Amino acid sequence: MSVVDGSFSDGFELGYRLIKGIHVGMPGTPGCPGTPGNTTPFLQGIEAGIKAAGGMLTKQG
Image (cartoon, rainbow, N blue to C red; front, top):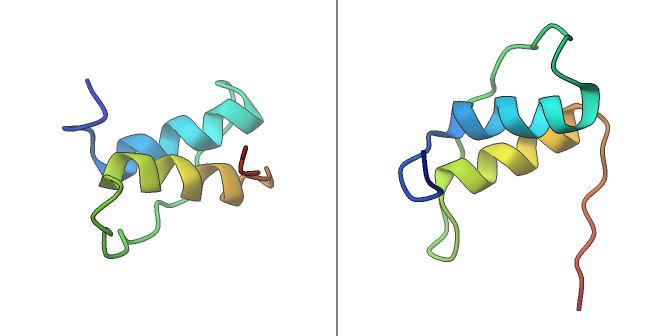
């Protein structure tokens, strides 16, 4: 799977499990928001999963 063809739900699961671990139950996957031109549904799913798991995103600059 690549960033180009991954689905929002795949990204959400990956992001959630990055924070909570692989042996935790998954919450329901939210609906996919509109995708801006500079991202993909998969990347948005990762972001949503991290936030749902209580993680924080920071921008490096």
